[in-house]
Image 1 (cartoon, rainbow, N blue to C red):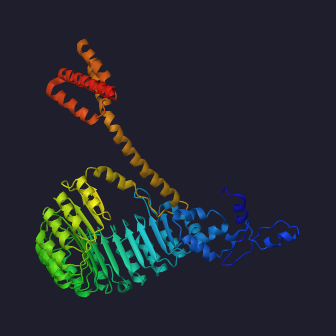
Image 2: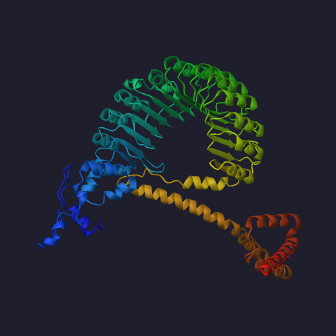
Image 3: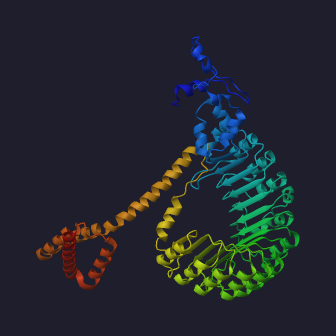
Length: 592
């Protein structure tokens, strides 16, 4: 493995387990000399103090390192390889079918894994029941399991897994194909299950023949249930209603009418403190049922157009401990001043308010600023009624505000000026897609309040930002194992290559237009007379000059000339344009 001599010698040492070994370095003989007596007890510079460290200390050091550094440390010597494997509790594997023969060696080395992620690419064949059963036999203490796109797993494999891993506390599965039988097996055998997250479970079919899921022995221990993009999510109703100790419920983009089920859930489970409803068919009936949870702390209403001020008022009236409220009105104008005034009146502990597609006025904002003394984070996005007057109201009344986000609102530099003297605790302002806010206004705000962080985004570079956000992130959770490591590297390289290719094509886009037009004109030249051919030859020479830089506009102008004036007028126009550009360039060169 390319080790140095010291590393190689270290690799031949026996593996230590919690013992302190003496240094094996032999010091050269020393002549007896009275002058050397003071140096006899001096520390030896060649001593290997790392070998004296107990295994427990090395394990603590390894646990403080990142995944990549841990891999490199495991290659130093055999002792480090063993200790690193025994101290690793989290593992992420590429769950392709080729993983099966590597499972015994992988889990012989990583025998203390408690958190396991099995992720497969959508275009690949995933692991089957046999692989999952082998893993369950070697990871008896598994506490967390994440399954992604493991389409070859069936109800039978999940049943055996649940019997072998009874200490499971968290299960997250997405884009898998097992159904209600496999899910019920987990709920019937894993009595310590605390968190369940299900997304696009393909095995659950629609109709009355669908087997209900739950409750099982896990219902009493469940604290978090998250259902995403399920075609028949109502089949989890028995489980949710039996989860008496549930604290968080998230229903995201699940089909079907949820009003009746939410009413039944709220009658039986009143301990919930966090509820997320996103793109759900729920009306004020279901929203009013949530009001039966007096300890509700966090509420997200995202794109639920049937919810109105009536439902929000009912929640605010009975959930007085509400601390975080997110509303995405989807520009339906069903929630406005009336509901927000009720929140300001009954929820004085509100600390975070996010309004998207909602149109509040200074009336409700003033009530919120006056009554919610602890409001620290406020976001106003896509609000047509939030202008300079509303921002001035916020600046004058929200003394506890620390973070303010304004997006796509008719706010100008005058609103920024109001923030310069208001909100004494403000530390960060983010303004995006507010065209009336200029860079000068943002700079003036920064200069006025030196400690304030001002982030201005006019929205002109959204496309480039989107490309950067898709490929610019660095993932810390690297895949481990003989197969997974190579898959992770290949995936990252493909993403970077795609981004570079897009950027390279974008840069070349300015010049491809003129090459295409040049090829077209060559074809025209071969079919025209000598007079027009001479003009086209001059045009071809003109197209190869470097001063045709704006290729897109150039192509548009050419097409307009062709459709309106014909080829002859096109030639005259291009020659005149080229002569003018030559004159401009020569004049600029003389000035330089």
